[in-house]
Amino acid sequence: MLNALAAELTQDTVNSILPKAKVIFFDPENNDNLYYKAAIREKIGEKFSRELSTPPEAGYFAKVLGTRIGSPTFLAKAGQTLSFSSRIMFKLKATKYISRPNNVIWPAPGSISSSVLSGADLRLSPFELAKAPSLPSTSLGALIAGPSSTANITSTGTQIEELKREGEVVFEAEWTVTLKSNGALVGPKFIQVSYKSTDWKSSLSLTSGARNCLSKARFQAGEFHHERFSNGVY
Image (cartoon, rainbow, N blue to C red):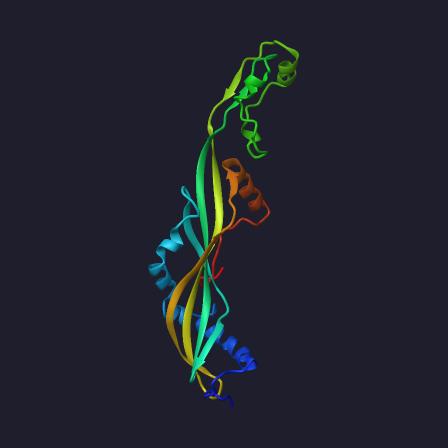
């Protein structure tokens, strides 16, 4: 029998209680838990909408992808009441689109110079090379060797660069249960939820051509899928 009236709990007792507390607060297998019954996710959305929608910097648009529930932490014991805290992490994605000029200038034969090349976009990625205009097989030699009938070729347009950043917003929910002498935990009650921190990772840049090629490669490899979340957990 557990001494539920003891002023303190031993570490062994706490260790035996934590697995029970974990499923009382959140169980991914069913909705019969405090997280759903107390509508904690909805409370966070209402109270901390700014924290969940603020992008890492101007020009980005942030959205929530899913949530992750941490294991509970034992806080204190007051009589038969046990206090716990559980961290709730919201996974966010911020996206920013930039339109960049994508000019490819092929100078007249024999006219290669630093001044001409300064107008060309020489930073094309392997994904963007397919966009470059095709040239007659003699063009490269003609450009180096001298004049011929090949005319200037200019390709104008834009490429869309997508900047993506992943982030995580952390909240902490405080809650209590009553400890029975037989070790059972009953009567869970939600107390409050507080904001803890926001952390954004460095940006990842992809051009429109790179995104298309990457998606095609993932699809062919059988890895293409939309991010899926089960019961609010990723």
